[in-house]
Amino acid sequence: MRTKVIALLGLTMCVALTYRATAQAPRSSAPSTPATPQSGGGGRGAIVVPPLFFKETWRLDGSPHAIAPGEAVVTNPDLELKLYGPSAKASDPDKRIWISGPPTNIWTGMCTTPFAATLRDKNNYVDLSGLAKVRWVTRASGFHAVRPLIRTADGSFFVGDHAEASTTTFLESEFAFAGLRWMKLDPDRVVTIGRYGPVGEASNWADPPDLTKVDEVGFVDLMPGSGHGSGGYINVAAFELYGMPIKRTGGRER
Image 1 (cartoon, rainbow, N blue to C red):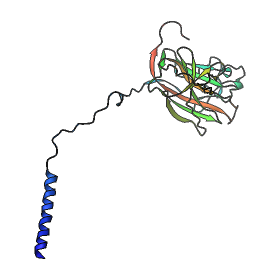
Image 2 (image 1 turned 120 degrees about the vertical axis):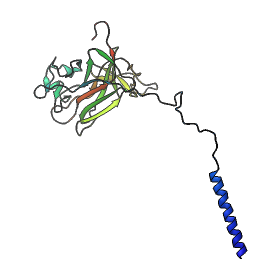
Image 3 (image 1 turned 180 degrees about the vertical axis):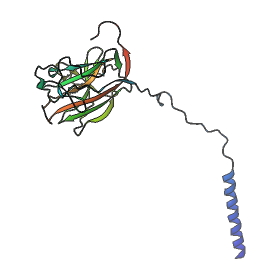
């Protein structure tokens, strides 16, 4: 019995020594290869974040009121406010676009037709390609929604498929232009226009517009307002646009 115990202890020591020797054996001398960024589309280049192109917070002189023809409601002297649709120039102030607050905002509640507004930099076009974006403070009532609107350098208007519809309070949010789908807009009636899709569906999606040279950027409410009080409208307060400026050159420009 004693002999068996001694033999078993000896075998255990042999196994332990073998394991220790294996654990201390030198690893392969082949150098490890560090991970490198993939080329040919596998990696990602430097992200270029465009600068702030403009910021507009609006100016309200006195109490909320319909914007009079030629009234200056922008705070940035380099910007022009462009108003579109029948409610932009209606003679009856209770059928026209209003400047309201607080916070100071453009309010579509009194508009009896769809309405659009844009901001135009007097000295520069803007390149909205890449990671260009809008940051704005908006609110909506009913089923209304705030949608982005652009006017390209050739004079075409496009409304994007992004929509803000916060009905609780004024909400700050942002979106990028990359990946948006667009519909053409008739600026006189402020309605979408277009064509049937490839199999006859009424999609109206336009070909992607050229975002590298945009003349005006703003917003649209595609529904008439409901009048005073809650019901149906949009509010657009602070409006920030991030994109690369492109100098306007030559000739008289609209």
